[in-house]
Image (cartoon, rainbow, N blue to C red; front, side, top):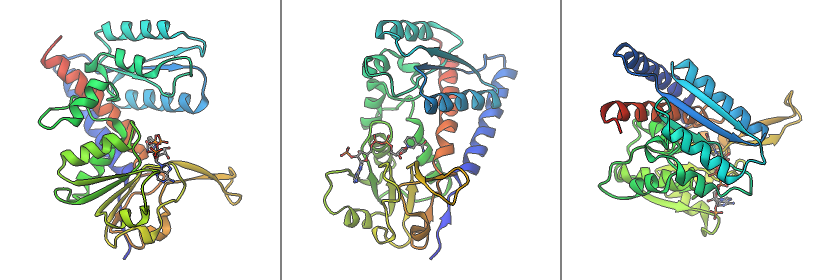
Length: 295
Ligand code: NDP
């Protein structure tokens, strides 16, 4: 069997085009452009690239964005002050504090200070709580897990009653994704570093999601023939044959698993491009909610 490739790059491009159309329609109806504010503390080069890409993506769909860059020595009180100002701004519908924060800052205190209606990363404990509670309507879903769900939906992968295994239980990917899969009526197993016989657990999956950060950990004999395999991992490994001396791989041994799975996301070009598209989608959603019910 050779798996169908789930092309996240193309799916994300279509979603961004749809968002651009909706943003333009809002503008034509006289509503303000959705606005995203990012806050970056310190000068971590990888974080700076992520933030830059988010602003570029906003501009491409007609959203406005504000980038606040603070020195690494910024105190927690100063950062909380910046968040409070952004909470109060009418032209800011979404606030994203880029993680990780420097060690002297309590990230949970900062995330908890973001207005829940502007928490487009969906990390505020109240928003995570809405995601976890049956019968509640979450305001947002966290961007990377929402991106995975969007790929599964576009590819018409059946989830109701399916066995889904999520490898990883982080706050940002594994745990919220497991909640979203439960909401979609999958039977979910969450596996982690203390799970016994991971290979056997994974082999029971109709839908297997890897979000561990271990290069090519999932091998073909971990995968049920025909299963859907979603690879969230982004790992840079040395490759003397590559011009740059390195290349990106996922948490799944792509070449061999693609011979056994029914459908698979590549790395790069799978889940990665979805994350920013879902951030734009959440920012538009926040702006629409504000237009419908101004606070
Ligand atoms: P974390 O390091 O926060 O969490 C990793 C999880 O994997 C933990 O739950 C950990 O278990 C589990 N784990 C680690 N090693 C093993 C192992 N050997 N066996 C079983 N379980 C293991 O990572 P993230 O969730 O933030 O990210 C995961 C991957 O996804 C990374 O490669 C990251 O780069 C990528 N990523 C990609 C994004 C995208 O846009 N595509 C966005 C965010 C992340 P335990 O809890 O027991 O420690």
